[in-house]
Amino acid sequence: MDFRSHIIGRIPKLTRITRPEDVDEVDFVDGLAEVEVPVRLLDLVPLKHSERLNSPRLQRLIRSIRSEGYSSLEPIVCRVGALGNWVVIDGGHRITAAKLVSQEFFTNLFGGKVGDLTFILFQTPMSYSKLRPKLDSDSEGPDRRYRAKPASRKKRKSRKGKKKH
Image 1 (cartoon, one colour):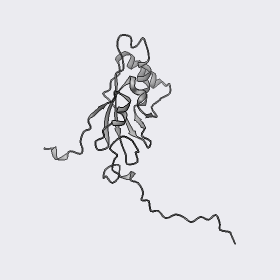
Image 2 (cartoon, rainbow, N blue to C red; image 1 turned 30 degrees about the vertical axis):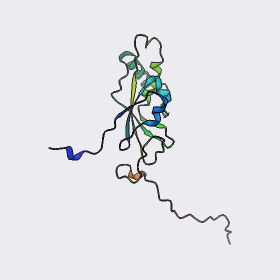
Image 3 (cartoon, helix red, strand yellow; image 1 turned 45 degrees about the vertical axis):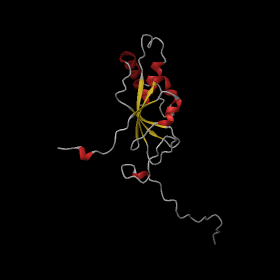
């Protein structure tokens, strides 16, 4: 069977963050972007909802990264928020554990246990971002339910000044 006619979209190229200006230069393809961030530059990324509190799950993940190292095979999924922040959908525990382990001196004495973190970013028509290009709100697809409502709405009359008889 020939699947070439069933291609849904293009694959975004990998963008690597190496300096603060690179955060604003992420290229989106059909509303998606793949971004690779070294752990030492993680504080430059405008993350939201990425910090996790101490829990047994977080401690297990920290122990695993200490013994085996961090694997970026499963990317962290984020959406671009209304103010341009990257809102973490999946991977908050991995971000917190990677940050904590990368700051430990003795764990990283003979080589870093955490290298790069891979992010998958997606935009919705409601996303405001200084990242380019903005997603077209007239697009058909799974996010059409997020289209902006028409500006011409009827305003309700105020009942403040009316008196009861």
